[in-house]
Length: 222
Image (cartoon, rainbow, N blue to C red; front, side):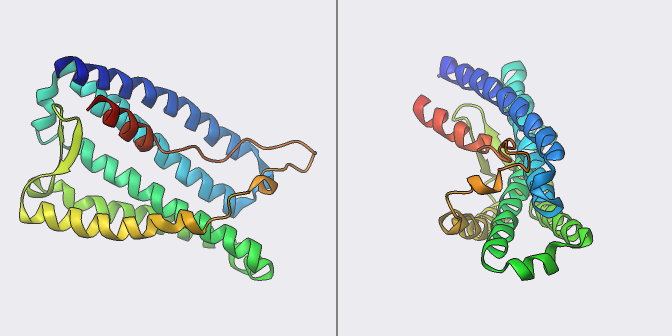
């Protein structure tokens, strides 16, 4: 078990650093790719920033603390890793939802798209709402009775066993899971959105969230 925990920690740190490097490069590429437009590019950048946050937490708080001293996970400060993951994950989900709505309107209602997203203020308000909702979702985890606890032995996050923890995780996870179903409604072929005006292509605007890789290799280790 000790070997598996340390192996999982090393993998978490390595995958997190790789994800961090990729997402930082994606963020820089999105800033340079003018063909995305302000609205779509800003939403892509918002999601990429949330991915960077997830990678940082997994690399330095989840895996890093486990390698240095796993007992730190049981302190109040150590439990903030779970809260930060909730914050960045929520921001990623809602940014992804906004991107899906943005593309759906662009494809089906192009004239309305120009009216809705032509103003930068509209996009800035949407991005602001995304991060406010994410902060509101993560705020209850500041309470000790609602903390998201990381267990180094099972290498899993779970809310503390209390009424507050059960309510926050149950209803929070419920509506986010419903929103997450939006992937089934998204067009699968979006290559025409990546074409640049000079005949080349712009770099892809997003990568898979590190959480998917994390779930995969932790299941293998069990």
